Image 1 (cartoon, rainbow, N blue to C red):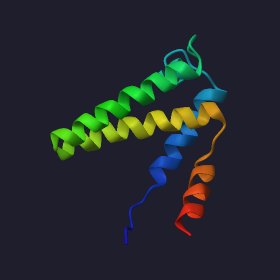
Image 2: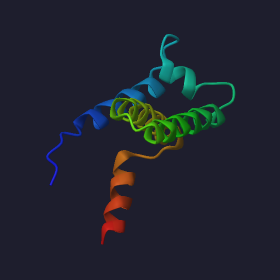
Image 3: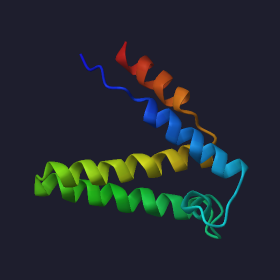
Length: 99
C-alpha cells in the first residue's frame, strides 16, 4: 500500500482555481484558461502531453516518463478547472469503479 503524500495535487488544483478567479497576464494557466480558442487550446495541450507521455513510455526512460506524466496531469487539472470538475468528482468516480 502506498503512503504517498498527494497533497501537491490539491495544492496545484487550488492554484489553478485561483488563477481562474484572479487572472494574471503573466500566468501560463491564465493564458490557457482565457485563450481565444477556449477549451480547444486546453484540449490541444492535453493531447500533446498524452502523446509525449506515450512516447516517453515507449522510450523506457523513467525520468522522461515522470516528466511527461507530470505535464499531462497538470494539463488535465487545468481541463478539470475549466470544465467545473473537482478532484473530489474524480476521486468519487474512481471509488465507484473500485467496488
